[in-house]
Length: 471
Image (cartoon, rainbow, N blue to C red; front, top):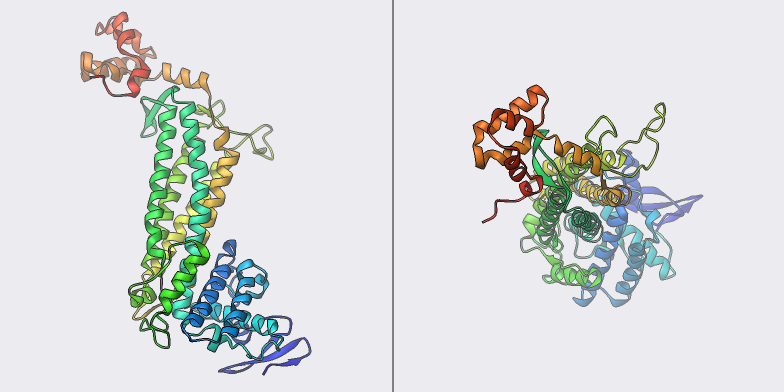
């Protein structure tokens, strides 16, 4: 039984006595982790997903054990009530552990067991730390091991963050860009390849390309989610299911589906679910692809908007804040800068996840916390950045029509429209002459005698160059 010593109480675990703050619901193993891993300040609080996931899991596990006759109903009810408080966020301050702990997440699992156990004891009118009438291991952790509960919580947290936060945020930005593409479908502008002038495109086509990229990236993430919906629960220590009811994993998954609305199911092969995290690696790679897409879009926007007088300046973007402490009136593309920095971070996070995913040795991968942390950070950052970029930049993007028209009129690559009529070699000669003598294409074409003025005007129509030849 726990005993109080001033502002502390004495808890016990298999290694002996541990002093725990008297006003905390955690126990000996959580306290040991606090003292043994003073590494960084990163906690599992990205949208409080991990704490919520642990609460969801412990509630489902207790209910499953009750349904399978493994746990008395009164204990099931107490654990479920305490877990509901964890799910709701009422006990977040009782989860102090950092990411950089044991690679199996054992301390975070025990943190949940101890907090839920002690809160259940409080609800029963008992003494915190007494482990009666609810024991953190025998009751809250019944039929479980950290080796299957923590990866299950990883998957729950990842699915909810990606499905409920990231994908909706990307859709908001996608829909804004689709609307802009429709609004500007008739704006013809200079195309660019190799950072050099190319044949004309429409601004609507450029933006529709961004939309297509976002659609493909979102589809890639959705394709990765079913693998993450497969849960390790029921595998216990090494995948054999030792000390767990044969139907435990299936029942827990069904209850989690009922609670969250997500299509969770027990993994068919628990050995793979414990010893490798391929599904999380796959989902992280899909978020990296999204980051690459968002980087491209944000970079295009800032390049099109560069200037306003000494750059391309074909797009205008919102002026959100002064851009310089010394240059009055300077405005910078800050939303593009923020987005591209986020994307760089996500690409780095994915590298960490990929390496960590390769570290499954025998029956366990012990890089679980860093995999989860980086994937959740990536999803959260991309969601936040998508909202910010949409609200503070994308909705205000407009064509700078006079600059677009001027650039288009002076583009040497309009000469490409002459290829079907006079051939590549003569068309090239016109472009070279116009460039070297600083003349218009029309002047050069007429002077060389390759094209009449009327034919030039008939054949060189920028808008016609934005689509294939008619049948």
